[in-house]
Length: 347
Image (cartoon, rainbow, N blue to C red):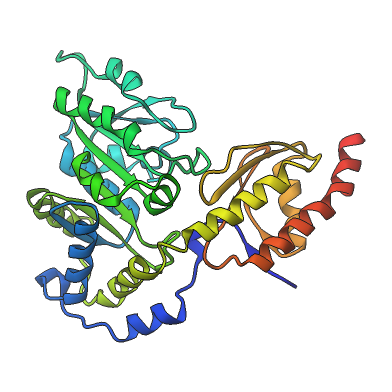
């Protein structure tokens, strides 16, 4: 039976070329700063985004949490959208690691504006936590892969500079956003104090994210990474996968976006689908008339894996291990579900 895994772009396996790059990587002790492949990845990623320096970490959760720790003090408060990954899916790390509270806003599909943020910045008053940081996410996972453009980001960055706040980007799928908007990665360094870039989602590396910032911030970040247990040794094998991904897997993201658009269009034609969130990148969110669990069970019988994000909402995520033939198989399977689901709805 055909298997199509649409649960997440984290499920990708290294390609043959990536495995070859990993196998031939030159490694050393990274805690001593001696792994030349990690050093090369960090320099490459920082340059790509117009930043001074970078640090390689096991996960995007770690790079985000390190950034929050670097840019805040206990009793501070950060501002983020209520769907933000740093708030919802990082285990309460904002409070645990940094002793910081969170002011949650409700943006359109997770996208914040300077007009939304400004009135939520606390005045200097002992009754209020000190607002010190704004966190954006690009693309927005819970927003169905919605994207910030640099035009959106510019006024937020200007507000942060004016008010003395730091601005961090959770760039879990930043290259998906860049592929969609056409913005230049190198321009991002003008706006953000910190940028987390994930290598293990759409880019297909098996492990790792990099945090980008100025040299002083990254120097402190290395101390925080050590405290969090993220000081790896001969991890250049993993960094080699990241370099390969940056060199070979960015341009092909447009294929994933095309597959997502096709799925979204077909879902919009099905009578048991109530709504499809507009598709921008590689995430498709859609609402079902039947409970999502019932639809997922029927898809699983046909070898299609997906995830629910609500009682009646399902998420598909396309990636480099989802090929055109699998997209077509998924569409035919979705069409085949129509009769049985319709009968349930009519009853």
